[in-house]
Amino acid sequence: MRILLYLPLLFFATVVSGADLIVGGETRYTVQKGERLELIGARLGVFWKNIARENGLDPEAKVSPGQQIKVTTRKIVPRVVEDGIIINIADRTLYLFKKGQLSTFPVGLGLPLENDFGDWRTPIGKFTIVGKRKNPIWYVPESIQMEMAFNGKTVEEAVPPGPKNPLGRYAIITSIPGVLIHETIRPTSVYRYQSHGCIRMLPESMEKLFPEIQKGAKGELIYEPVKVAVGDDGKTYLEVRTDTYRKVVSMRDHAWKRIEEKGLAGTVDKDRVEQVIKEKSGVAHNVSTGSRVAEAGQDVPKKEFLQKVFDLFTPGSKKAGPSGVQGPGGRGILIQKPLSRVSFFFSAV
Image 1 (tube, one colour):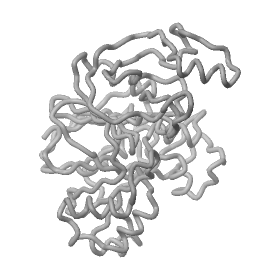
Image 2 (cartoon, rainbow, N blue to C red; image 1 turned 180 degrees about the vertical axis):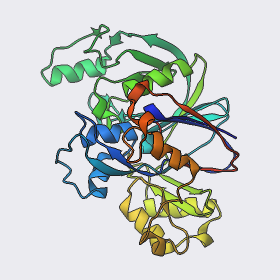
Image 3 (cartoon, helix red, strand yellow; image 1 turned 135 degrees about the vertical axis):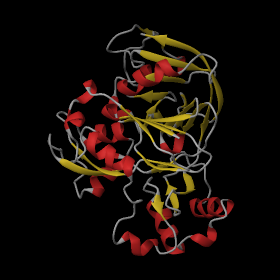
Image 4 (cartoon, rainbow, N blue to C red; image 1 turned 120 degrees about the vertical axis):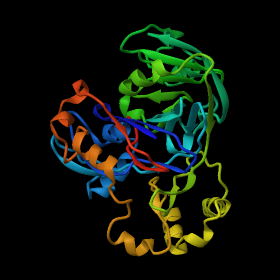
């Protein structure tokens, strides 16, 4: 199995196996100049209030350049396909499967709102990529024009390319009417629900994704706030997220159903499962029998070779070496290592 790690941009790709996939892990991040918790969360694919809570910070407090913060990004890949795009609305992540490799990107999605002007929730369903545009013109939908007028804003029918165009420099057109995958000029809206239904991406993410997507590519938008997987360490992991679009009648029943469908009910600590359901942290937690004892130590898989490489070379990592502080000018690393399962990889940004 071949592992590709594009460390300077926090972009990750790995060859996909048939086993459960768990991406991300636990690391320490060095705050860069001009960053706030919201932007750090958008870049790392983590709810920014989780970062505040994990570090004992006031959510409204400012962070300083050079400050070290702990960040847990561990999440379960909801579905594996041979080639194509999976966007899980519930975990605000785009998963790109191409030539047997997986790349992940945080995304921003539609507001959990339906009003007189429209339904702004990002829809679920299969789609095809029908076009791509560089420096696109934004033709403002009538529903948004009506909202502009209602809010006393200048009504625009079209916005030309430029710094004020909300589509940014790149747009990928899906077959779902009105739904684009595009760069955003509002980076802190990524990994949040603030769009009118489109899929927003950070500029650095879109620069990576845009050349990889071709017309005719297939994709699907899904909504799965509960995910269960068996890690490379043999432990059972459960990830529960907030039901932002209110599609699940009972999160507790849904979580236990997923565990039972995987045939893992006999492997889990019931109290730990109930705790994870209650917290809805959006982080994949070890819920195996005895995991409450492990929680007193460290509820993460043991650091393996790849995580040590991540620590050594990733910008912002506590153990970053010279290559890790070069920024975008640094070079990626190609690692070849046979693995039967993938269980400890950093999520893309």
